[in-house]
Image (tube, rainbow, N blue to C red; front, side, top):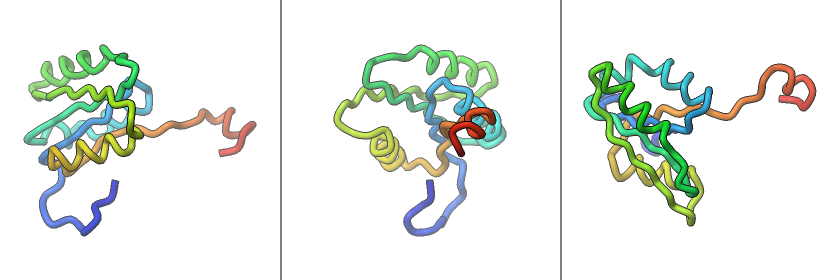
Amino acid sequence: MVPEHGVTRDVGKRVLIAWKGTRESARALHDAWPLVMGAEQVHILVVSPQGEGGADGLLQRHLERHGREAKVIVDRSHDASAAAILRGHVKALDIDLVVMGLYGRNRVQELVLGG
């Protein structure tokens, strides 16, 4: 996510982890781990219109075992896209860093289907 009007403050004080329980989400969290551990506030956002979940609680406990308190937000909105929901929480919580994985294909799929 890129800010609308440039960065005017420190980044990484209020972190939002957009969590889906996928390999890509786990990799993004792993790569951002030092930033997450150094944040003042950490929020875990799960967008789940069907009410699925559970992995968010596991992630919260994992962070707590490492000394980082995190608040879990499960958004079950049906009337907005995941991107709109994410933007809404970023704005409402004054988040300055979003950690999220992206969908990817493995190398064989890329060769067969294109990348």
